[in-house]
Image (tube, rainbow, N blue to C red; front, side, top):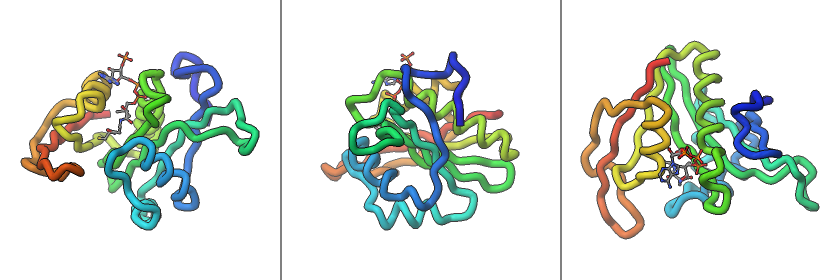
Length: 167
Ligand SMILES: CC(C)(COP(=O)(O)OP(=O)(O)OC[C@H]1O[C@@H](n2cnc3c(N)ncnc32)[C@H](O)[C@@H]1OP(=O)(O)O)[C@@H](O)C(=O)NCCC(=O)NCCS
């Protein structure tokens, strides 16, 4: 997939679709981006559910070991009929604040619209200002609250905001 120039976050980043065969790449990105990552088998299972797919951001200036470029972010989404859900998005700490998250979300929203969705939901922890700011900036609105929805690694129970965007 090629992003139009204004959407390119930083030079050399491209966004590509990834299927269930990419579960190891996604799990590795999860481990870098989240304190409580998902293990490889859970990622594989998630990607095997019909209607589920992902995009990854690749730094296309290739490293010596990998001619296709290093993965620097991912997004997972699911479509059921005309509704889509953003299941997860993550960018490793050293690549944040460079526009990669926004580019991944923009590309995923384009894809779900093309696939026939007219609204998109997601859940986000109230304790995650970066993600809430990204979604708010991309015109998601809060439509619900799930009390004590996430258990963090320190045992804290955190409310989730349910956010929606109409396409
Ligand atoms: C949320 C996350 C994906 C954002 O990725 P990113 O590549 O850093 O985001 P971008 O650089 O594209 O930022 C886009 C917008 O998001 C908001 N934003 C991103 N990081 C922010 C921060 N630390 N504080 C406040 N706002 C922030 C801003 O509105 C920003 O726009 P701006 O750069 O014009 O100010 C990233 O912080 C991450 O991986 N976090 C850990 C995993 C996670 O929590 N995922 C979400 C689970 S629901």
